[in-house]
Length: 372
Image: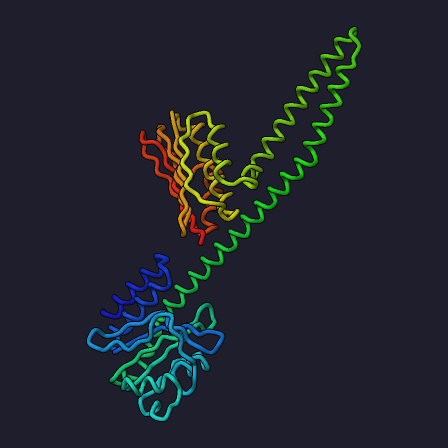
């Protein structure tokens, strides 16, 4: 029952997506308590033939002898760590095995009178990742100890795999967002340098033709005027499409002027507070700009608000954005393609986004993006 309770606690952490470092410490403690060890540690095998300590536990009644987190041991034979890495199978050694060992771990075991060390491989998606080690003054029962360790170690492997998959997903999403931003910038340049310039030139030619129409051909002159108006409308729509990508004011002058431009264009008063020193990385500036643009657009369309407030602050760890209004509230976080795309963009940068919108209490969009 004690073991099953320990396994449930660890499994709950794994299922909850808790950071691997917390799971490593929890597993080291649970294994040590269930198997009545003096000390336990979890190590990660490195390419340079060392093992990094990523989690450890010591019985409260024992003197603390474990190396610090992040400390590295050379993987030298004879040692349990070397056996586990060489065979990807459980291994154990006793004080008799360590008696003549000249390895760093062997000398350490003799100094601290460790009678038995049991190691179990940690596998992540079929690859050897590291080892779970148990240190005891009393030699634990062979076979049974390794079997009981295996269930905990499987959970460690699942936690590491989950974290790696999550990290890979974030990296993939970041690459997709960066590629999409670059495509939009290229589209903006192409529109500005190509179609827009050609339409402007055509409009000028038509105006010249309109001005040269003889006085007696009023009908022709009106037709040319209509064509010019339609052409001006097309040019205006094209400019809107172009400016809807990444605005030149953002890339050239930074976040503060770009947000000031958004606030001026909003049909309701916007109180703007930008506490950012210098330029931020391009992906973060673009994400903040799009977040403010989307939030203010939704406020103007649906919130029935009389005012809005935008606050952006950056410290040495993160950028925090808040867009609030005094409207009717009731906004659903999952509504709208714009909000879904914005959430993907923020999460691709490792950040988070929340919407707080109680009925009658206005709406707040909160974005937090780490940047260092």
